[in-house]
Amino acid sequence: MATRVRKPVVEVRRSQRRRRTVSAYRDGERVVVLIPDRFSRAEETEWVERMLARLAAREERLRCTDAELLARARRLIARYLPDHADQVTPASVRWVTNQNGRWGSCTPDDASIRISHRIQEMPDWVIDYVLLHELAHLVVPSHNTRFWDLVNRFPKAERARGYLEGVSAAAG
Image (cartoon, rainbow, N blue to C red; front, side):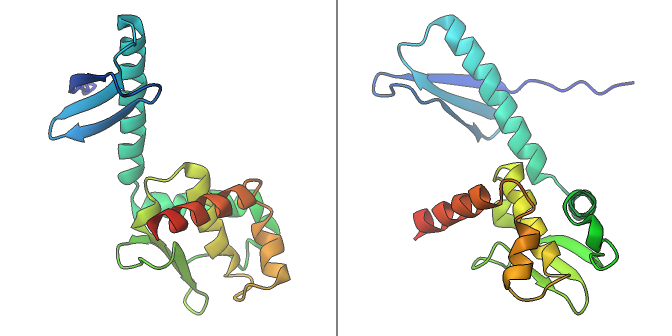
């Protein structure tokens, strides 16, 4: 028997000051969606559904377990580092809450990788970049040219670096 997912109670708040942006957040069991006052009922319905989907996707990412993170790492190895698959075998890949100064870390000696919980809400391609960066350290421990050649196999590497730099700059 399939479990039925209940839709949350949604409170829509219209604002005359809000022009184009729409945002949503959880307030207990309720979801609050903030929209411009000028939106029609059809636009409101469309945006409520869109924002509920975004919140659900973000919450699903937050539920990603260490085992799922390890599976994700293996997929990245197969896709971007297949010629180093024998060297890139992490013993563990896990989320940690004690890394506030870096996005991830790797200890090549014991092949352990730790990824900061702070990136869990970031886009998947940013998470993949951070994970691939740490996996590359299992092949090349330093940040030399060979290391960056491996990391740059990821098509969105430069974009992800820019994203992370922006987040760091905004945080001060």
